[in-house]
Image (cartoon, rainbow, N blue to C red; front, side, top):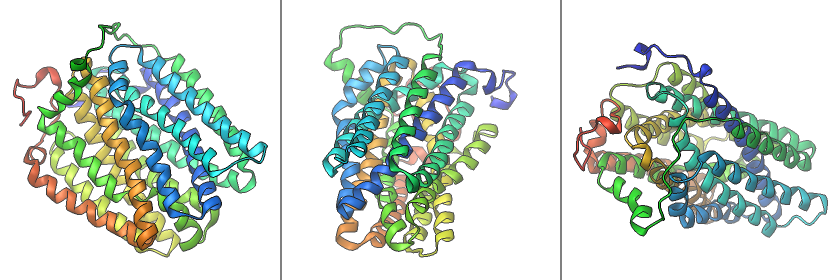
Length: 419
Protein backbone atom coordinates (compact mmCIF):
# COMPACT_ATOMS: atom_id res chain seq x y z
CA UNK A 1 0.00 0.00 0.00
CA UNK A 2 1.46 3.35 -0.98
CA UNK A 3 1.61 6.25 1.42
CA UNK A 4 -0.50 8.39 -0.84
CA UNK A 5 -3.37 5.89 -0.65
CA UNK A 6 -3.60 6.06 3.14
CA UNK A 7 -6.04 8.55 4.64
CA UNK A 8 -3.95 10.06 7.40
CA UNK A 9 -3.21 13.59 8.62
CA UNK A 10 -0.14 15.15 7.03
CA UNK A 11 3.20 15.33 8.81
CA UNK A 12 2.53 18.91 9.87
CA UNK A 13 -0.36 17.64 12.02
CA UNK A 14 1.92 15.22 13.87
CA UNK A 15 2.88 17.66 16.64
CA UNK A 16 5.59 15.52 18.29
CA UNK A 17 7.27 15.11 14.91
CA UNK A 18 7.05 18.85 14.20
CA UNK A 19 8.79 19.70 17.49
CA UNK A 20 11.38 17.03 16.81
CA UNK A 21 11.93 18.37 13.28
CA UNK A 22 12.50 21.89 14.59
CA UNK A 23 14.86 20.58 17.27
CA UNK A 24 16.82 18.76 14.59
CA UNK A 25 17.18 21.97 12.58
CA UNK A 26 18.36 23.96 15.62
CA UNK A 27 20.86 21.34 16.78
CA UNK A 28 22.35 20.82 13.32
CA UNK A 29 22.65 24.55 12.60
CA UNK A 30 24.66 24.89 15.81
CA UNK A 31 26.78 21.86 14.97
CA UNK A 32 27.52 23.07 11.44
CA UNK A 33 28.54 26.50 12.68
CA UNK A 34 30.94 24.93 15.15
CA UNK A 35 32.29 22.51 12.53
CA UNK A 36 33.03 25.34 10.10
CA UNK A 37 34.71 27.41 12.81
CA UNK A 38 36.78 24.49 14.09
CA UNK A 39 37.92 23.49 10.59
CA UNK A 40 39.01 26.99 9.67
CA UNK A 41 40.74 27.64 13.01
CA UNK A 42 42.60 24.32 13.00
CA UNK A 43 43.93 24.96 9.50
CA UNK A 44 44.73 28.60 10.34
CA UNK A 45 46.67 27.57 13.48
CA UNK A 46 48.52 24.56 12.06
CA UNK A 47 48.39 24.84 8.25
CA UNK A 48 48.25 21.03 8.26
CA UNK A 49 45.98 18.83 6.13
CA UNK A 50 46.83 15.97 8.50
CA UNK A 51 45.43 17.93 11.45
CA UNK A 52 42.21 18.49 9.51
CA UNK A 53 42.04 14.72 9.14
CA UNK A 54 42.63 14.29 12.88
CA UNK A 55 39.40 16.21 13.52
CA UNK A 56 37.56 13.30 11.92
CA UNK A 57 39.58 10.65 13.72
CA UNK A 58 38.96 12.24 17.12
CA UNK A 59 35.20 12.07 16.54
CA UNK A 60 35.50 8.47 15.40
CA UNK A 61 36.89 7.23 18.73
CA UNK A 62 33.77 7.93 20.87
CA UNK A 63 31.50 6.33 18.25
CA UNK A 64 33.46 3.08 18.44
CA UNK A 65 33.95 2.98 22.20
CA UNK A 66 30.37 3.95 23.13
CA UNK A 67 28.35 2.08 20.48
CA UNK A 68 27.27 -0.91 22.59
CA UNK A 69 26.37 1.30 25.57
CA UNK A 70 24.39 3.72 23.38
CA UNK A 71 22.25 1.03 21.76
CA UNK A 72 21.48 -0.66 25.05
CA UNK A 73 20.52 2.66 26.69
CA UNK A 74 18.32 3.74 23.76
CA UNK A 75 16.25 0.55 24.02
CA UNK A 76 15.78 0.83 27.80
CA UNK A 77 15.56 4.52 28.73
CA UNK A 78 13.68 7.59 27.57
CA UNK A 79 15.20 8.42 24.20
CA UNK A 80 14.24 12.08 24.56
CA UNK A 81 16.31 12.36 27.76
CA UNK A 82 19.34 10.82 26.05
CA UNK A 83 19.08 13.32 23.20
CA UNK A 84 18.84 16.25 25.63
CA UNK A 85 21.89 15.12 27.58
CA UNK A 86 23.87 14.70 24.35
CA UNK A 87 22.98 18.22 23.25
CA UNK A 88 24.01 19.54 26.67
CA UNK A 89 27.48 18.20 25.84
CA UNK A 90 27.43 20.37 22.69
CA UNK A 91 26.71 23.36 24.91
CA UNK A 92 29.82 22.58 26.95
CA UNK A 93 31.96 22.23 23.80
CA UNK A 94 30.71 25.55 22.41
CA UNK A 95 31.39 27.15 25.78
CA UNK A 96 35.00 25.93 25.75
CA UNK A 97 35.65 27.45 22.33
CA UNK A 98 34.00 30.75 23.27
CA UNK A 99 36.05 30.90 26.48
CA UNK A 100 39.24 30.21 24.52
CA UNK A 101 38.48 33.04 22.11
CA UNK A 102 37.57 35.46 24.91
CA UNK A 103 40.75 34.76 26.88
CA UNK A 104 43.00 34.44 23.80
CA UNK A 105 44.02 30.95 24.91
CA UNK A 106 42.58 29.05 21.94
CA UNK A 107 45.00 26.31 20.89
CA UNK A 108 45.05 23.27 18.65
CA UNK A 109 44.66 20.99 21.68
CA UNK A 110 41.71 22.95 23.08
CA UNK A 111 39.97 22.67 19.71
CA UNK A 112 40.66 18.94 19.64
CA UNK A 113 39.22 18.63 23.14
CA UNK A 114 36.03 20.36 22.01
CA UNK A 115 35.90 18.05 18.99
CA UNK A 116 36.13 15.02 21.29
CA UNK A 117 33.21 16.28 23.39
CA UNK A 118 31.18 16.88 20.23
CA UNK A 119 32.00 13.35 19.08
CA UNK A 120 30.75 11.94 22.40
CA UNK A 121 27.53 13.94 22.14
CA UNK A 122 26.87 12.90 18.55
CA UNK A 123 27.60 9.26 19.39
CA UNK A 124 24.64 9.34 21.78
CA UNK A 125 22.36 11.80 19.96
CA UNK A 126 22.32 10.48 16.39
CA UNK A 127 21.37 6.79 16.83
CA UNK A 128 18.92 7.66 19.61
CA UNK A 129 17.24 10.32 17.48
CA UNK A 130 17.07 7.88 14.55
CA UNK A 131 15.32 5.27 16.67
CA UNK A 132 12.91 7.89 18.04
CA UNK A 133 11.47 8.89 14.64
CA UNK A 134 9.20 5.81 14.17
CA UNK A 135 7.52 6.51 17.52
CA UNK A 136 6.42 9.98 16.41
CA UNK A 137 4.34 9.16 13.31
CA UNK A 138 1.98 6.40 12.15
CA UNK A 139 3.82 3.55 10.39
CA UNK A 140 2.30 4.45 7.03
CA UNK A 141 3.89 7.91 7.20
CA UNK A 142 7.37 6.72 8.11
CA UNK A 143 9.00 6.95 4.63
CA UNK A 144 7.70 10.51 4.30
CA UNK A 145 8.81 11.30 7.85
CA UNK A 146 12.29 9.97 7.09
CA UNK A 147 12.55 12.23 4.04
CA UNK A 148 11.23 15.22 6.02
CA UNK A 149 13.63 14.46 8.88
CA UNK A 150 16.48 14.34 6.36
CA UNK A 151 15.30 17.67 4.92
CA UNK A 152 15.61 19.21 8.40
CA UNK A 153 19.23 18.18 8.40
CA UNK A 154 19.80 19.61 4.93
CA UNK A 155 18.13 22.94 5.74
CA UNK A 156 20.46 23.24 8.71
CA UNK A 157 23.51 22.23 6.67
CA UNK A 158 22.65 24.97 4.18
CA UNK A 159 21.94 27.70 6.70
CA UNK A 160 24.53 26.79 9.32
CA UNK A 161 27.74 26.95 7.25
CA UNK A 162 26.55 29.78 4.98
CA UNK A 163 25.57 31.98 7.92
CA UNK A 164 28.52 30.78 9.98
CA UNK A 165 31.00 31.68 7.25
CA UNK A 166 29.60 35.20 6.88
CA UNK A 167 29.48 35.76 10.64
CA UNK A 168 32.96 34.29 11.11
CA UNK A 169 34.37 36.87 8.71
CA UNK A 170 33.04 39.54 11.10
CA UNK A 171 33.55 37.83 14.48
CA UNK A 172 34.56 34.21 15.22
CA UNK A 173 33.39 34.75 18.81
CA UNK A 174 29.86 35.53 17.62
CA UNK A 175 29.70 32.21 15.73
CA UNK A 176 30.37 30.29 18.94
CA UNK A 177 27.79 32.30 20.88
CA UNK A 178 25.08 31.75 18.27
CA UNK A 179 25.82 28.01 18.15
CA UNK A 180 25.46 27.97 21.94
CA UNK A 181 21.97 29.51 21.66
CA UNK A 182 20.88 27.05 18.97
CA UNK A 183 21.83 24.08 21.16
CA UNK A 184 19.80 25.46 24.06
CA UNK A 185 16.83 25.97 21.73
CA UNK A 186 17.04 22.37 20.55
CA UNK A 187 17.05 21.08 24.13
CA UNK A 188 13.89 23.09 24.82
CA UNK A 189 12.12 21.72 21.72
CA UNK A 190 13.02 18.11 22.55
CA UNK A 191 11.48 18.63 25.98
CA UNK A 192 8.19 19.47 24.24
CA UNK A 193 8.14 16.21 22.26
CA UNK A 194 5.55 13.76 23.59
CA UNK A 195 5.40 10.14 22.53
CA UNK A 196 2.96 7.33 23.20
CA UNK A 197 5.72 4.74 23.13
CA UNK A 198 5.22 2.38 26.10
CA UNK A 199 7.88 2.45 28.82
CA UNK A 200 10.78 0.23 27.68
CA UNK A 201 11.78 -2.81 29.68
CA UNK A 202 14.75 -2.21 31.94
CA UNK A 203 16.05 -5.68 32.40
CA UNK A 204 19.57 -5.87 33.82
CA UNK A 205 22.04 -5.55 30.95
CA UNK A 206 23.73 -8.73 29.82
CA UNK A 207 26.49 -9.37 27.34
CA UNK A 208 24.03 -11.17 25.07
CA UNK A 209 21.49 -8.33 25.08
CA UNK A 210 24.18 -5.76 24.33
CA UNK A 211 25.46 -7.78 21.36
CA UNK A 212 21.97 -8.62 20.10
CA UNK A 213 22.07 -5.78 17.57
CA UNK A 214 25.16 -7.22 15.88
CA UNK A 215 23.56 -10.66 15.73
CA UNK A 216 20.34 -9.22 14.32
CA UNK A 217 22.20 -7.45 11.48
CA UNK A 218 24.51 -10.40 10.82
CA UNK A 219 21.59 -12.73 10.12
CA UNK A 220 19.89 -10.28 7.74
CA UNK A 221 22.01 -9.79 4.66
CA UNK A 222 19.92 -6.92 3.34
CA UNK A 223 20.61 -4.85 6.44
CA UNK A 224 24.26 -5.91 6.53
CA UNK A 225 24.75 -4.94 2.90
CA UNK A 226 22.96 -1.60 3.23
CA UNK A 227 24.91 -0.54 6.32
CA UNK A 228 28.34 -1.61 5.08
CA UNK A 229 27.75 -0.04 1.65
CA UNK A 230 27.49 3.37 3.26
CA UNK A 231 30.53 2.72 5.43
CA UNK A 232 32.91 2.11 2.55
CA UNK A 233 31.45 4.56 0.02
CA UNK A 234 31.58 7.56 2.34
CA UNK A 235 34.86 6.49 3.94
CA UNK A 236 36.48 6.59 0.49
CA UNK A 237 34.48 9.44 -1.01
CA UNK A 238 34.44 11.97 1.83
CA UNK A 239 35.89 15.38 0.96
CA UNK A 240 34.39 17.62 3.65
CA UNK A 241 37.55 17.74 5.77
CA UNK A 242 39.52 19.22 2.86
CA UNK A 243 37.09 22.05 2.07
CA UNK A 244 39.18 24.59 4.06
CA UNK A 245 42.10 23.78 1.74
CA UNK A 246 39.93 24.20 -1.36
CA UNK A 247 38.48 27.47 -0.01
CA UNK A 248 41.82 29.03 0.94
CA UNK A 249 44.40 27.56 -1.44
CA UNK A 250 42.63 26.25 -4.57
CA UNK A 251 39.48 28.33 -5.11
CA UNK A 252 40.70 31.25 -2.96
CA UNK A 253 37.26 32.26 -1.69
CA UNK A 254 37.95 32.72 2.04
CA UNK A 255 35.77 31.74 5.03
CA UNK A 256 32.55 32.98 3.41
CA UNK A 257 33.31 30.79 0.39
CA UNK A 258 34.01 27.89 2.73
CA UNK A 259 30.53 28.36 4.15
CA UNK A 260 29.04 28.12 0.66
CA UNK A 261 31.11 25.02 -0.14
CA UNK A 262 29.90 23.31 3.02
CA UNK A 263 26.32 24.34 2.23
CA UNK A 264 26.29 23.28 -1.43
CA UNK A 265 25.77 19.53 -0.84
CA UNK A 266 22.86 20.36 1.44
CA UNK A 267 21.21 22.53 -1.24
CA UNK A 268 21.05 19.56 -3.59
CA UNK A 269 20.03 17.27 -0.74
CA UNK A 270 17.26 19.58 0.44
CA UNK A 271 15.64 19.80 -2.99
CA UNK A 272 15.80 16.02 -3.23
CA UNK A 273 14.37 15.31 0.21
CA UNK A 274 11.50 17.77 -0.31
CA UNK A 275 10.55 15.80 -3.43
CA UNK A 276 10.96 12.47 -1.60
CA UNK A 277 8.80 13.64 1.31
CA UNK A 278 5.94 14.12 -1.18
CA UNK A 279 6.73 11.35 -3.65
CA UNK A 280 8.77 8.66 -1.86
CA UNK A 281 10.50 5.95 -3.86
CA UNK A 282 8.38 2.84 -3.33
CA UNK A 283 9.54 0.53 -6.15
CA UNK A 284 12.91 -0.71 -7.43
CA UNK A 285 14.59 0.50 -4.25
CA UNK A 286 17.75 -1.58 -4.71
CA UNK A 287 18.48 -0.37 -8.23
CA UNK A 288 17.86 3.24 -7.21
CA UNK A 289 20.29 2.91 -4.31
CA UNK A 290 23.17 1.71 -6.50
CA UNK A 291 22.43 4.32 -9.17
CA UNK A 292 22.73 7.22 -6.74
CA UNK A 293 25.95 5.79 -5.28
CA UNK A 294 27.45 5.86 -8.77
CA UNK A 295 26.34 9.48 -9.25
CA UNK A 296 27.93 10.31 -5.88
CA UNK A 297 31.28 8.93 -7.05
CA UNK A 298 31.22 10.79 -10.37
CA UNK A 299 30.27 14.10 -8.70
CA UNK A 300 33.15 13.68 -6.25
CA UNK A 301 35.58 13.21 -9.14
CA UNK A 302 34.29 16.33 -10.89
CA UNK A 303 34.73 18.38 -7.73
CA UNK A 304 38.25 17.08 -7.18
CA UNK A 305 39.64 18.67 -10.33
CA UNK A 306 37.55 21.84 -10.45
CA UNK A 307 39.24 25.23 -10.08
CA UNK A 308 36.03 27.11 -10.94
CA UNK A 309 33.97 28.10 -7.92
CA UNK A 310 30.49 27.82 -9.54
CA UNK A 311 31.36 24.41 -11.03
CA UNK A 312 32.60 23.25 -7.64
CA UNK A 313 29.33 24.32 -6.04
CA UNK A 314 27.32 22.47 -8.71
CA UNK A 315 29.37 19.30 -8.29
CA UNK A 316 28.89 19.41 -4.51
CA UNK A 317 25.15 20.01 -4.95
CA UNK A 318 24.84 16.94 -7.20
CA UNK A 319 26.90 14.97 -4.69
CA UNK A 320 24.54 16.03 -1.92
CA UNK A 321 21.41 15.22 -3.93
CA UNK A 322 22.59 11.69 -4.69
CA UNK A 323 23.65 11.12 -1.09
CA UNK A 324 20.25 12.32 0.14
CA UNK A 325 18.42 9.71 -1.91
CA UNK A 326 20.79 7.05 -0.60
CA UNK A 327 20.30 8.20 3.01
CA UNK A 328 16.50 8.14 2.78
CA UNK A 329 16.46 4.69 1.17
CA UNK A 330 18.96 3.20 3.63
CA UNK A 331 17.45 4.79 6.73
CA UNK A 332 13.94 3.70 5.75
CA UNK A 333 15.11 0.14 5.13
CA UNK A 334 16.89 -0.07 8.48
CA UNK A 335 14.02 1.44 10.50
CA UNK A 336 11.14 -0.33 8.75
CA UNK A 337 12.76 -3.77 8.80
CA UNK A 338 13.81 -3.54 12.47
CA UNK A 339 11.32 -4.17 15.32
CA UNK A 340 11.03 -1.35 17.87
CA UNK A 341 12.55 -3.48 20.64
CA UNK A 342 15.77 -3.65 18.61
CA UNK A 343 15.81 -0.18 17.04
CA UNK A 344 18.09 1.41 19.63
CA UNK A 345 20.79 -1.23 19.28
CA UNK A 346 20.50 -1.52 15.51
CA UNK A 347 20.49 2.29 15.12
CA UNK A 348 23.59 2.52 17.32
CA UNK A 349 25.41 0.02 15.12
CA UNK A 350 24.17 1.81 12.02
CA UNK A 351 25.49 5.08 13.45
CA UNK A 352 28.82 3.39 14.21
CA UNK A 353 29.11 2.49 10.55
CA UNK A 354 27.72 5.77 9.22
CA UNK A 355 29.60 7.90 11.73
CA UNK A 356 32.75 5.90 11.11
CA UNK A 357 32.41 6.43 7.38
CA UNK A 358 32.25 10.20 7.80
CA UNK A 359 34.95 10.58 10.42
CA UNK A 360 37.30 7.95 9.00
CA UNK A 361 36.61 9.39 5.56
CA UNK A 362 37.79 12.78 6.82
CA UNK A 363 40.90 11.17 8.32
CA UNK A 364 41.57 9.21 5.12
CA UNK A 365 41.21 12.39 3.08
CA UNK A 366 43.58 14.30 5.37
CA UNK A 367 46.26 11.59 5.30
CA UNK A 368 46.07 11.25 1.51
CA UNK A 369 46.11 15.03 1.08
CA UNK A 370 49.20 15.33 3.27
CA UNK A 371 50.93 12.73 1.06
CA UNK A 372 49.57 13.43 -2.44
CA UNK A 373 47.72 16.74 -2.25
CA UNK A 374 44.06 17.59 -1.79
CA UNK A 375 43.06 17.14 -5.46
CA UNK A 376 44.46 13.62 -5.72
CA UNK A 377 42.95 12.68 -2.35
CA UNK A 378 39.43 13.65 -3.45
CA UNK A 379 39.89 11.98 -6.84
CA UNK A 380 40.90 8.72 -5.13
CA UNK A 381 37.73 8.96 -3.06
CA UNK A 382 35.47 9.30 -6.09
CA UNK A 383 37.05 6.35 -7.88
CA UNK A 384 36.86 4.29 -4.70
CA UNK A 385 33.13 4.97 -4.35
CA UNK A 386 32.49 3.60 -7.84
CA UNK A 387 34.56 0.48 -7.13
CA UNK A 388 32.72 -0.19 -3.87
CA UNK A 389 29.33 0.14 -5.57
CA UNK A 390 30.34 -2.44 -8.17
CA UNK A 391 31.76 -4.81 -5.55
CA UNK A 392 28.64 -4.63 -3.36
CA UNK A 393 26.39 -5.41 -6.32
CA UNK A 394 28.26 -8.71 -6.61
CA UNK A 395 28.72 -9.44 -2.89
CA UNK A 396 25.12 -8.60 -1.93
CA UNK A 397 22.84 -9.49 -4.86
CA UNK A 398 19.92 -9.24 -2.41
CA UNK A 399 20.31 -5.46 -2.48
CA UNK A 400 19.88 -5.23 -6.24
CA UNK A 401 16.62 -7.16 -6.03
CA UNK A 402 14.95 -5.10 -3.29
CA UNK A 403 11.70 -3.85 -4.80
CA UNK A 404 9.64 -2.58 -1.84
CA UNK A 405 10.03 -1.87 1.85
CA UNK A 406 9.03 -4.82 4.03
CA UNK A 407 8.02 -4.00 7.64
CA UNK A 408 9.59 -6.14 10.37
CA UNK A 409 6.27 -7.61 11.49
CA UNK A 410 5.51 -8.74 7.94
CA UNK A 411 8.86 -10.33 7.13
CA UNK A 412 9.21 -14.02 6.63
CA UNK A 413 11.15 -15.93 9.22
CA UNK A 414 14.22 -16.25 7.02
CA UNK A 415 17.57 -15.35 8.53
CA UNK A 416 18.89 -13.90 5.29
CA UNK A 417 15.97 -11.54 4.72
CA UNK A 418 16.18 -12.16 0.98
CA UNK A 419 13.35 -11.08 -1.24
